[in-house]
Image (cartoon, rainbow, N blue to C red; front, side):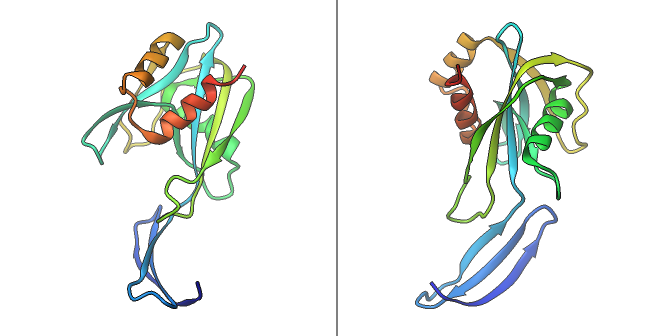
Length: 170
């Protein structure tokens, strides 16, 4: 569709809202312009998964999910994945395996969420999350993680995609 007019409706710093008028549509399309995100599934030498328990304001509750966050300007997604793992869990790892990406919501958003598996994760210090984050590391064995996925205890859609992709790795 041919674009007729675009206007910035709101700038929240880490995302912008734009309204776009298109030929043939009576109402504008609303778009959220966001940076890419990462999710980092970490596994230690014993095969346990290093996740985070995190407060999510949208649901006014906690989730269990892989470490993750925004890709900073000029930062490679893999570097962001390693950084977020260290910040949110206090763990670092050896081999970093890309698990692809997905478009979180292509109806409204233009960004991607990149997934990574970090093998050989070891605790290297205390978590040092951003001031706005309320996170705590959670270590789960594979069976407990699979049960949490099957039982609906992990409800963050992107977390489920990341974890299922990681679990499918040899």
